[in-house]
Structures are given as C-alpha cells and as structure tokens.
Length: 311
Image 1 (cartoon, helix red, strand yellow):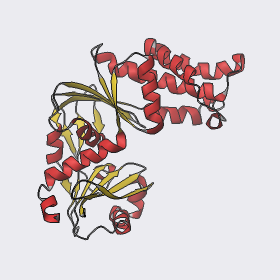
Image 2 (cartoon, helix red, strand yellow; image 1 turned 180 degrees about the vertical axis):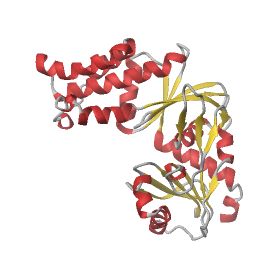
Image 3 (tube, one colour; image 1 turned 60 degrees about the vertical axis):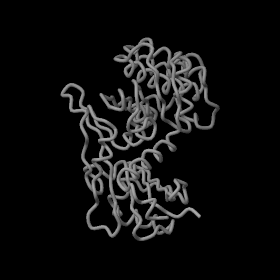
C-alpha cells in the first residue's frame, strides 16, 4: 500500500491546488480552491494550508513543497528570485524555508531577468519548466506557457537564457469588459466558437503586428457593418492578441524554432489552433501534469531520503 511521502502545492494569485503524493509517486488526494495569494493574505497562509492538509488527512510531520505566489513579496514568505542565465537545477537549490512550522515547508524561488531594457520576472512557471524539460535538458527549447500573463522562455542545455512576459490574458479581460468592444462580445458565452475568425485574426496580427489596435476595432466595426455575431467578435479579439503575442515572442527566435506548449483546457485548444494555422512546429504538454512533475523533482532534490523514510 502506498503511503504519503510529501505534499505538493501550486499557489497562484487566485487559485490553490494541493496534491498528497505517495511514496511511489501516486496522487493519493487532491484539493483545489480559489484561495490564492489574494485570499490567503487576508485569511492567513498557514490557516489556508492547514485546512487543506486536514482535509486530506496529511500526517503532522509530512513535508510540503510549494511553488507560485506564496513566495512573492506579498505572499507568505518571500522566496526571492534566481537570476538569468540560470540552470533549472539552481532553482531547486534556492527553496526558502517557512519558519515557525511543525513540519518542513519549502517555497521555490522565481526567476528574474535583470536586463535594464527588458526586466522580467516569473514565479510558478519555473516549476512547469522543470516538469516539462527536467533539470538537465539538452538542446535549444522555446517554451510557451499561456495564461493571464503568458511566458515565453528560451532554454539552452537546461539553462534559462531569457524570457518574455506578454499580458495577453489580462488585456483580453480588460478589452472585453472595459472598452467599447465589450458591447461586441455581449452574449458570446452562449454561442459556438468561431474558429475561422480566430484563425484569420491570428494570421493578420502575426503578419502585421503594427496594425494590432486597428485589427481589434474590426470586432466592433464588423458587427455594425457586416452583421457579425458576438462569437466572431470575441474570436477576432482573442486571435488578434494571441497573434500579436506570437509575433513578438518569435521576433528574436530562429524561423525553424520548435516550440513546447505547456497549457490545458481552453488555452491549450486556442494556442494549438494558432500554431497550426501559422504552420509552427510545436509539442503540447498538459500544464497540470508538468507542475506536478516539477514539484516532484523539487521534493526529491530537497528530501532525497523521504521515500525510504516512508517505507
């Protein structure tokens, strides 16, 4: 019978995910909630974590490995950043301990790009990178991680050489809720997605990124003049923003660069469609799976004897 070895937690800004992991790597229990950093900072990080540990009946001495916004300056304990260029293995060595806990609780650091012209940070995505590529990957990789703030990362022989953040998801939310285009997408949630309009918008923005704001307005003008529906408007906005993002991300990459896409659900489908229509080579990996693998690699590096202790 597999017994608990450690607890893995992905603690985002607005979401919380916890897995009770067994001595042979199996998932013995799982918890998900909206108690991300924003909520936990009000309720108390220790209190939120303990409520979920109690729910899965985690033993009192079981160690916990955490990635994400719990390690931010506004989080539980600041885990800091590892500077680029850095190996993914260095990220594992930088885990910060949470003081005053009966159990061993560690939070993984983020990665910082301290370039005066292009400063950038990531927190949580480094664990997905670790899960997707491993600590000692070989060759050149370009990794795309869609989300509210999309990350594009360049990795060479296991070393993160640089990355870029694109505010695609947040811009989509703002544009569709707080601009004139909010009228264009009213009712889109009840309509079938317009893949053709999405693909056309991706291509237009990728090929002519300087026209991005003009292309966005076609979502509204198309309704007024051509009778386009809300689903078409939403597809145009989404496709324009994603096409613009891809154009920017690949502007410094080789034409034949292969992309690793880390995503799940609706974002996975959108980016797969975009890449295919742009004839870009890519390999898709499920985001939930890689964050668990990354946390597992961290746990094994920090507590290498935990499995034997649990046996």
